[in-house]
Amino acid sequence: MEQLVPKKTYTLVWISLMCLTGLTAGLSFINMREWSTVVALLIAATKALLVASFFMHLVYEKQKVVWIWASVGIFWLSILMLLTILDYVTRGYLRVPGK
Image 1 (tube, rainbow, N blue to C red):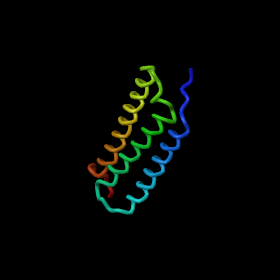
Image 2: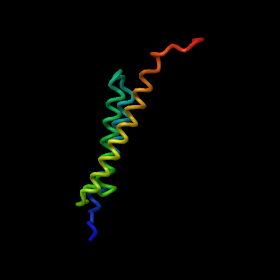
Image 3: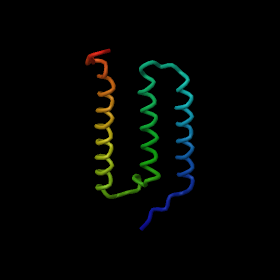
Image 4: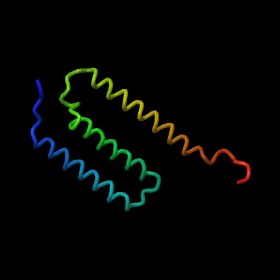
């Protein structure tokens, strides 16, 4: 049996996403030094959580398997982001001949 979601829920989630997008755009003009990336990633993670929870109907799902796979996906994404950040941070440590 399908869970019928009221349009009001979708509207409130959409308004929240638009507010968070506006917040991201507004904060991009403020120099927060090293915290700029952290704040932007936190806002992006919040938006992703809203989309996955409501538009992908994870909130209404009763099966534990869906939550397990969603957790595995988030875990894998965090591994990829960690490796990317570590690559970016450690680029200046090795000296390259000729530079």
